[in-house]
Image (cartoon, helix red, strand yellow):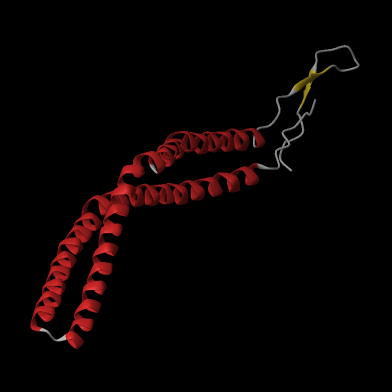
Length: 181
């Protein structure tokens, strides 16, 4: 058994604790950012994007109806050459309306699937956040206490031990060597 405290790695524990605290701060920020992004994405899909594409469907429907009306009017007037341009305008308006309807359908599909696809991962993120906000700080605190204890231990002197004199008299005390190096 060693007679003196021989603690050489308190600095390593202190560096690890400091790195752990830096990691905790960065990890908390990252988890918060991702969690915010998940919620913002859901609100974006439910609100802004849904309203935008609903408005586009209405707008493009009106443009299609106007283009069809122009085509109908051109056909009634008897100008066969002009109807090609009106027909192209109708085709272009139909494609634009189909695109808007497809995007609105896609948005609605994403909203239906959001809870089943994204939320399980978000729940895992909540577990990570709980670890980062409760368990890891406790571990960092514990490491601080370990550092204090090891520091105190390294700076203590071993107790004196009795030495029996050869003359048969009272035991003398001999100081232990210092634990500091």
